Amino acid sequence: MDLTKDFVRAKRPCSSGFRWFVRNRPAGGDYQDLLDALVAAGRVSDACWLLDQFGPVDTVLELDSVDAEAIVFAGTLRVRGGIDVDTLARAGGSIHAGGGIRAGGAVQVGEDLRAGGQVRCAGLLQVGGHLRADWGVEAGGDLRCAGDLRVAWGVACEGALSVAGRATVGADLVAGGRIECARSLRVGGRIEAAEGLRAGQGILAGGDLRCGDHLDAGWGIRAGGAIVAGGSVRAGEGVESAGELSAGRGYGIHAGLAVRRDAWDASAPVRASRRPEGLVSGWWAGEAADRAVPPGIEPALALGFR
Image (cartoon, rainbow, N blue to C red; front, side, top):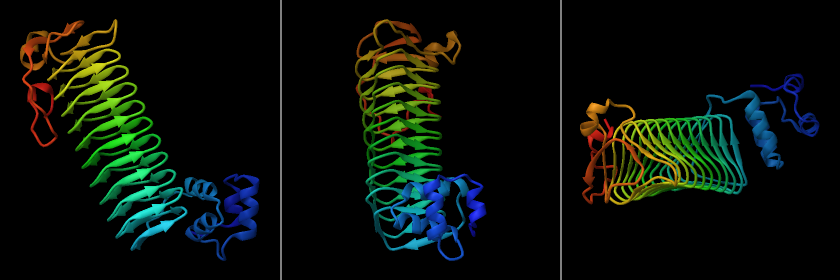
């Protein structure tokens, strides 16, 4: 793609960025050459603006490794080793790395992100498709995934976490904001959200499940430890905790919201170490057995995992 002066001007760039483009654009005005030149000149934000305006391309770049100040690539990056950048890693297409990915700032990927090691960034982690990591994932800001999230170890983000598909995490899941998952949420360890937590389908935790606001699942909720919410607990089907089950002060526990009342005993059981205060709906089925439920174990159908 050749970017002429008139073509770029039509996108209304900032005055300093446009002056730099007029003075320094590579011969021929090739899209990726211009992105590389902007990054080399320390104008990473201008390179991101350019990618926002003109979008991704089908080009695939294969490398042994990446060790740079920043990288902004309009196509797909395939790296046999790891990626290590001081600031930003961004691709209009996908990023596939055989090793880990580390960025001193944000990581933004237009399509899928696949890493054979740890994914760690100090800012936003944004993936336009599926995210899969064979180790853990750490983000210093929000974590946004427009597809499925599948992580072998733990996930920690200092901001909110949103997943448009399913989320499967092998160890702990900890978020400094709200957790939103459009489909099922399955975690081998504990789940902690500083704010609310919502899953469109079921929630399964191998350890404690704690959130600072409302806990909401379209299907069932099951934890191998305590379930503690700062707001209400709402489940379309059953709720089972191997420990304490409690809602915030003045709030209730609502199970069986998606099933008929005459089917609560089968489809909306509520179990915990003791009967919770504020149980508004659902079938109290007595004390729960002490059993952990890592993602490899098939959960009970009565709790809404199908």
